[in-house]
Length: 431
Image (cartoon, rainbow, N blue to C red; front, side):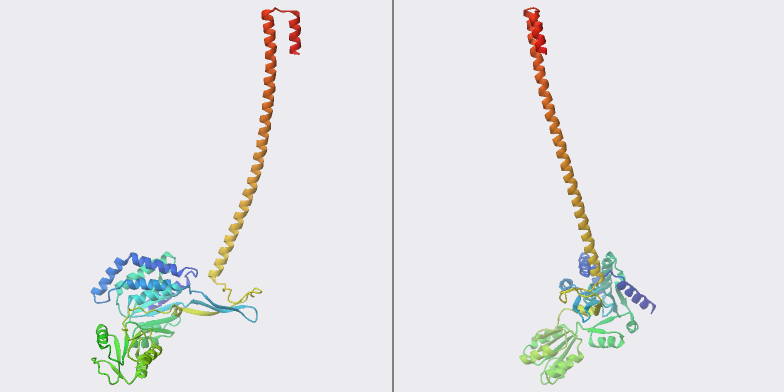
């Protein structure tokens, strides 16, 4: 009992502490990538189970099929279903949320385990996969370890996903305060037993158990092949028909066949063999199984196909903030943690943009000021250059003037001798 209490406590802490804004789809995608990277190791573990007559050979195409199904699911966690304005002008409506801790009670089928675990992660629930046998134990434990590795990479408590082998299922299911919903995957008798033991709602799903109603022998060869391939078939035969089977239930007509199937079925897959179109339509409409077919085999791959909405709760939400005038209904979301963080993020981004705009304005003003200063400096330099040019021109003119004086004075003295009139001329030139 102590171990069960510890497992339940860990599961509660795991989903309680999980960040509401974590992208479940991204986590699931990373899980599939890690499973693909470790395909060889999973195959080795699977071979151990098969060798010990304790499992079946995995079909990895089923992993891809499940991956495609998960990718097609829209974001359903904390989704606003409806939003209206009440008479007091307040917001009211419905929003989805997680359940808490889910208990999967099954026989160890790996596909079933993987589907429920991934959908639990998408909906931010913790899950305890519980089995009374160690069927597919090596395979399942390795897959759970890989899943937990991804959870820890996202800073999520690995106890969000736990696997439990126990013969004390009734004891486990008596903890109604720690378990929020139970999924019973198995045959009719197993489902009835789990429903009786559980203190909370039980969702019953069947797989690998089939119903076959025969009221026409046209396809007898095909029917024989179906019965030979699978032993988990309940066969119902219309009264008066001679069939080569010993173990079957005789029924008077289609109404009795449908009543018997709905009472005994695991709810997985049922088929009718008939030449009556009306009876075929009635069978398709009235039989309460997930998969129904006419004149074809009910044998399909062992996948449960649980509606993800079964892993969610719906909350009636009231928020005392009046709607803005002139707005329409269904345009608002409740102020969830995700919405608040997004709003704060937008505010931070807007503040950053405004700060950048201010910085750009400052840089622009500084640039304009620098351009003005540069222009003034260029103008000043141009004036200085022009003044230097003027001074240089005046200097050159004066130099030429002196050179002329020198030449005339020099040649006058050289060839004529120094005369009074030369001195007077020199004086005039110099003046």
